[in-house]
Each structure stands twice: as structure tokens, then as C-alpha cells.
Image (tube, rainbow, N blue to C red):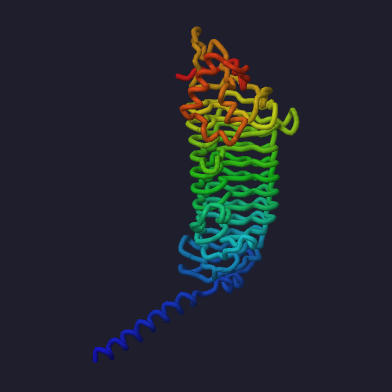
Amino acid sequence: MRSGNNVAVSYSLTFLLLFASLAVHAASSLQPLIDATPSGGVLRPAPGTYAGPATIAKPMTLDGGGKVVVEGNGKGTVLTLAASGAVLRGLRLAGSGDSHDGIDAGLLVEGDDNLVEDNVVDDVLFGIHVRQGNRNRIVGNRVSGRPAPRGQRGDGLRLWYSRHNRIEGNAFRTVRDLTFANSPDNLIKDNRLEDGRYGMQFIFSPRARVEDNRLADTDTGIAVLYSPDLTVRGNTIAHALDGGGAGIAFKDSGSALVENNQVLHCATGLSANAPLNAEAVLTVRNNRFAHNVVGMYFYGEKGGHRITGNRFENNLTQVAVSAAGVGEANLWQGNAWSDYQGFDRDHDGIGDTPHEIWLYTDRIWMETPRAKFFANSPALELLDLLERLAPFASPSLILRDTAPRMVR
């Protein structure tokens, strides 16, 4: 009898597992409901899980009310919005494929003037992919990727040949990058990103406005490549340390305005190279660079950038250059320096003497990257002290701030 009972239990367990498996795979497809909705209509599916992938090819509203899950089959993109003037809200999208070449995503947007708001996108390779889509609003969504080394994840957000989009109030976590490629004139505002490779990267994407975002625990915060005329304002970037990352990095991207940002505890606060011409300089004003390994770093150019009204607080090295003479044409004025050693005898808030930074022993690691490992080591600090006391070579001037602000 005991053996018979065991057999009965085994058959019962097998039946339950088979039934559970069939129940999972028996989720209703979302596509027939989309197809049955007229153009301009509103689809509010009953709460539950629906099978993807699915495609919306007409202007309509799909509202999940926060209770609808669209589950992909592990191949390709979960939901494709191939229409203009549609609304997508209140859904959870999950279960994309894992192809980087195919850009398998939770959501693909290929139209114009759509609203994508208050959705949750998780368990996907790429989060939201906008491909040749203009004037879309991507607002209030939460996107998280699959656990993997940062370079092997997909982008939380990817725009390709897309312009005049508004990316606002979204939260991204455990993704690779937020990438804007060949996508000018976009607004990226009030978003949050934690645990990524590049917080944001702009490639051939001029005139973007990047405002009031918070980026933390990334390799690099905001990287701007070949993308002039950006406005980077009011952002907070913290803990961009891995791989020698910078909070804000410009390469061949002039005429940018960088103002009112906080860059904290990064390998480098801001790095930049030569302006493309004398007019294409950076304006860097009223920012706070604090507790970074290097506050600012300039390479490969004589400069001409305008750096005014910033606060440099307790960076291990306030400003570094790749070689003597680099950055010598930069304008420094009205910045506050935590290591300023002058006085303000007339109490006008401006130091009585200019603040100067000279290149002494630091030039060893600035000009020889392999020696950077020893920067701020006791040996180099001692050597630097001795050279300041009795220079055995003529030091080079990195900067002279003629009107340093006093820090209370």
C-alpha cells in the first residue's frame, strides 16, 4: 500500500506541474485585443498577464492601469509601437530576447508624437528603444535590466536618428547606458540612473538639453562625443569611479554650457580636449566639483574655455593637464578654491592675490599615464614638497584665477 501511495503522489505531482506549465503558456495573446481596437480607441485589458510579442500599428491608447503584464517569449522585442499619436501607459513589459545585434528591447518606438508613461520595463536586455521617432514623450517609466557585467547589458534607453523627444522623470537601474546616437535637439530632464556604465552618452547628437538628472554609481557620468551646443545644467553626478571615469567628459564637442551641476566623488569631475575652433569653447560656470580624485582635466589643447564661478572643494588634485602648456589659454575667474591660501583684507569676498596652480612633481604622472598609480603617494608628495622648496626644474603654470572667491 505504501508503494501504491507513493505512485499516486508522484502522478499527482506530475499532473500539477504539467497543469502549472500549461497555465503559464496559456496566457492570452495581447495582439487580438490590439487588432480589435479601432483607430483612436482606448484599450483597457482586464488585469492579468498577456503573451507577447505584440505590435501597435495605429493611433490608440493602451492603458494597463498598473495591473497588466505583457510577457515576451524570450525572443525579440516585447512590444513594438509602430504608430504615431498613440498612448502607452500602466503596463509591465518583460521577457525580451537577448540579442545585442537585434536590439531586443522591452519597448520599441518607431513613430512620432507618442506618449509612453508610467510603465515598468524589467527582465529585458534593452529597455526602451526609440528608432527614427520624433517628438515622443517618454515620461515616468521605470526601467531595470538583467544582472550582468555592465558592458554586457543593454541600454536602458536608446535613441537612434530621433529628435525633439522629451525624456523626463524616468528611473533606470542596472542598465548599460542611456545612448543618444545621431539624435539632435532632445530634452533629457529629471531622470534617475543608478548602476550603469555610461550614465548618458551623446554621439553626433548636438543641441541636447540635459537638466536636473541624478546619476550615481556609473563608470562615467555624461560623455559627449562630437556633439556641439549641449546644455548640461543642474545635474548631480556621483561615484563615477570605475575605469577612470569622469563625471562629465567632452571630446570634440564645443560651444557647450555646463552650469549649476554637482559632481561628487568621481575619478575626474570634468574632462575636455581642444575646442574645434576659437569660438567653440566650453562655458563652465557655477558648478560644484567636490571630493573627486581630479577636479578638472584638460588634454591635447591650449584651451580657451571659460571657467567661472565654480567651487573646487577638497579634490585630491584640483586641476590636471596632460602636459605643460595644455590649457594655458583657458579663462579662470571668480572660482572658489578650498586650498586657496590668500586673504581678503577688504572683505569684498574676493581674494587679495590670484590663485595659481603650478606643475611641479605632478607632471610625472600627468605626462606619464602609467605613473598615475603613484599619484598622491607619500613618495611623490615628499618629492613634490622638496621641489617646491628648491625647484630643480622650472615649474609650469596650469592656471591663474585672478579673482578667486573666498569660501566661508
